[in-house]
Each structure stands twice: as C-alpha cells, then as structure tokens.
Amino acid sequence: MEYQLTFDLPLRAAQGREDFFIAPSNALALATLDAPETWPLGKLVLIGPEGAGKSHLAQIWADTHGASLVRAAELRADTAPQLASARAVVVEDAHQIGGLPQAEAALFHLHNLLGADAGLLLVTAQTPPRDWALSLPDLSSRMQAAATVRLDPPDDALLAAVLVKLFADRQIAVTPTLIPWLVTRIDRSFATARQIVAALDAKALQKGAPVTRVLAAEVLDTLP
Image (cartoon, rainbow, N blue to C red; front, side, top):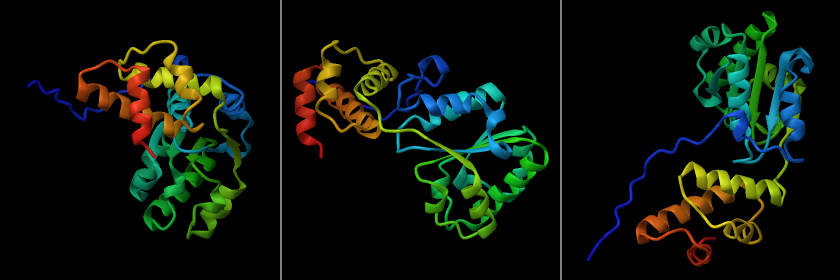
C-alpha cells in the first residue's frame, strides 16, 4: 500500500503591489495609504477583518516608504527608538495590545518619537481603537484621535481573485470552473477562503489527487 506523506511547510505568499487585487471594498484604503501626506499628524489606523488584506497593504506601504514593520504584541520600550529611526513604521495587529503594559507603553513612546520627527505611523487592527481595551489612557486617546480607513468584506469578484492567489501561493493548479463554484458556496470572508484552500491542499496531498470540484465538495461537507 502506498502512502502520501504530508509536511506542514511554511508558505511564502506573494505580497507585492502587483499581487494586490483592487476592488470597491479596498480601493479607498489603497488610495489613502498611497497619500500619507494627507494623514492628520502622520498617523493612520487600517481596520479590517482577519485575512482582509491588511498585512498585504501594510507590506506594500512598508516597501514603498522603507518602513520598519513590527507586530504590536512584540513591541518593547528599548526598541522604539530604533524603529522610529526609519521615520516610517508599521505596527500590525494592534487590537491584541490591550492588557500588555510594556507593549502599550512602547507604542505610546513610538507614537511620540515619530510625531516629534514628522514621521509616519501606520497601525493595522481588526477593530477600532476604542475596542482594544487599552489600559494606558494617553495611548487610548491618541489612537482614537487617529484617522482610520476600513477594508470591507470582499465582493464575489475579489473573493474569486483571492482564491486564485491562494491556490497560486501553494502552487496548486485548478480548473477555471472551480473558483466560481467555490465563491457561491463559502462565506464571503478572506479567512474562510484561506481555510478552504488549506483544507483542499491537505486533502489533495493526503489522497495524491488533484484539486477538483468533487474533492472540494467532499472537503466542504467536513468543515463547519
């Protein structure tokens, strides 16, 4: 009997500007990031659900402006000056920072350093700053005063494009009819699209079979 071995290998998703699909749900966010000179006090909060493309947009912006990029929960006071020296910083997943005193203090320090040097601060989060449960009042007031722009849930065309990209990132060839078939059967969510593609990849590797509509139907029946 033959067995198909599977390995949990890290994937390198395409994160260039040419890989970002523009749609009504994200066009305003992209245009706002492209014009940092319009950000009040040089800071902006980018809000959107999990998998909506925040990290992709943040990476595009960081590459364009030579920005430092750090996850909010990993911020430390002693690294703030080094990050600020780039004069452009991306802080990702700031909704996870509430209740982490050291990270909150570091973001507040970073915010002040960039403000004093006319730098730029881009913060990404799944929810608005008022919902981050920040314990540092000064940081809470400054984040809530920042301009915000939102990524909306995808329409069918964008969800289809994202599915194509997710399959391509995993080097999976699919038939043209599979994508629209999936779009009509999954939640309109980037997080769901990622879950489905990962599950299809795993099942195809397990069976040693291509990703087809039959396999997709089998996988969808097993997922919540």
